[in-house]
Image 1 (spheres, rainbow, N blue to C red):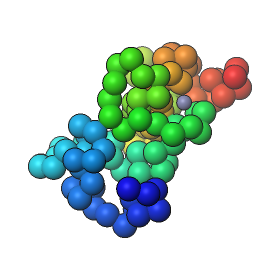
Image 2 (image 1 turned 90 degrees about the horizontal axis):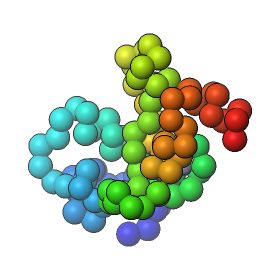
Image 3 (image 1 turned 60 degrees about the vertical axis):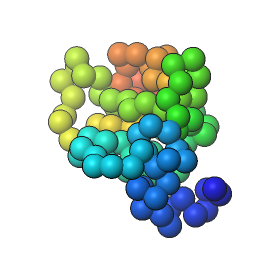
Image 4 (image 1 turned 180 degrees about the vertical axis):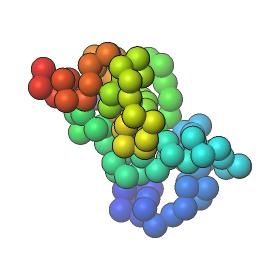
Length: 106
Ligand SMILES: [Zn+2]
């Protein structure tokens, strides 16, 4: 599948081609939010801008994760804007920094 036609499809239609988060079947609002984030960023990491792996693989630093712009233990606002899709590598490097702190430091 090319990137161009990803957006033309509903999530359910490419579920089985793109990793476990995209499997067909009923989804919780959390799963839908994750899928929307991934698509909104065109499958690219919020921080390094590289393509993320939609199939979760704990050994692949490019596996995608959901990152909290303001970390959970630092009084984040409970709103959608506090979430971005980021590759596992960036998420781990960022750690407890806020997105702003991380981008300034790198
Ligand atoms: Zn990244």
